[in-house]
Length: 241
Image 1: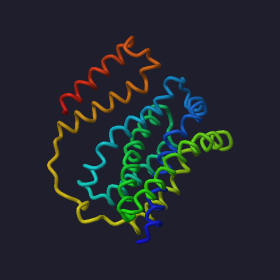
Image 2 (image 1 turned 180 degrees about the vertical axis):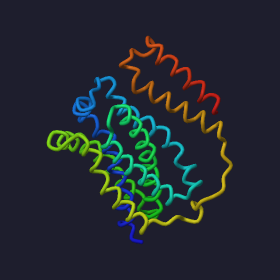
Image 3 (image 1 turned 90 degrees about the vertical axis):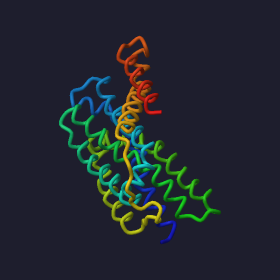
Image 4 (image 1 turned 60 degrees about the vertical axis):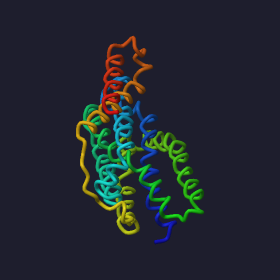
């Protein structure tokens, strides 16, 4: 399969995932007004996505081996796309936060998966070209995200910052089904799962991400909430190691 078609297939969902990390920021006032939430409460819609993203990214390699890389890529795009519909259909802030967690679970794997697929689609001597292409997408997303989010929220409705992902996600699934193939070593394999280790890693990373996102607003360790989250994060990571 042509390497440029493969690149387009994996960079398209990656780009919309990166855009989604910043697009909500500029629409936050519209969201909290529509859902009758305070500014501090509404920021959990951003934090929830980043937390689930931070959990999934380090697990991507393991999950790719468990499910097969192509299947895991398709599942990730499907979860991201469906949860985008759920986010746009949220009826209150609590439901939006839950759906953003699910969206982050789907979107978190897209960047590392696309990077790995690009490196295999391009010959070794063109790896620099592949990474330059990946870098353009990673840099372009945060640039266009705030502009796109602000324009959509002002001219349409904030729900469309999520609904716009649906046709792109469906197109991405179709393209990836056609053009992506797993190398033999990345096909689904039977693996022993350390459930306790996985649980400790998830808890540790989630608590750490919340501390980093909310620490400044809560005055860091002056807040018992941040203090105990830090304790939980450090203890979980130490026990995991």
